[in-house]
Length: 163
Image 1 (tube, helix red, strand yellow):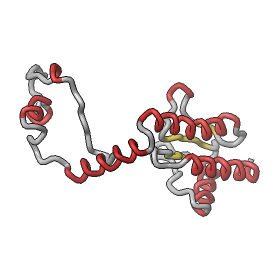
Image 2 (tube, one colour):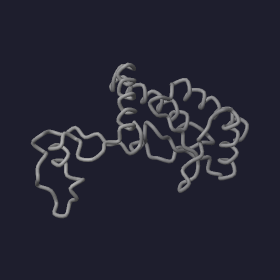
Image 3 (cartoon, one colour):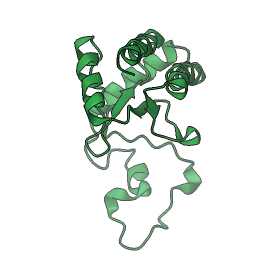
Image 4 (cartoon, helix red, strand yellow):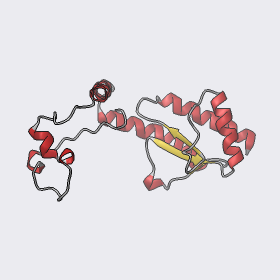
């Protein structure tokens, strides 16, 4: 769902008045439970979008199917990065994300060239986060496997031309 929406599913025995002293009323689960989640104005649009996403996830086969699908997509990209002579992943294997895959060439100018050429080829938003640089492929739930395969194909071509 959209950023900023939080959904809490909690056992009722954990909803108590036993909170740290000074905890604002707004941050106490009991406040929300007692008011049927209507203590404040709920973010209606965000909740609506979450509902759409949940229905889409269910239509796609549910969480287990999506997990498998995301693992397959990430494997395609990580397998390429692990054998690449030009591109290197920046996160150790045990800490890798299935959603955001950061990588570098090791040369800032070559990174910039890759981002520019990738954009011309239709791959957008690959520039890495401003604080870490490099590149980042976001392969969220809605990204099809074919999109990751096309990205890897483009990366292989770039590597052949620039390594």
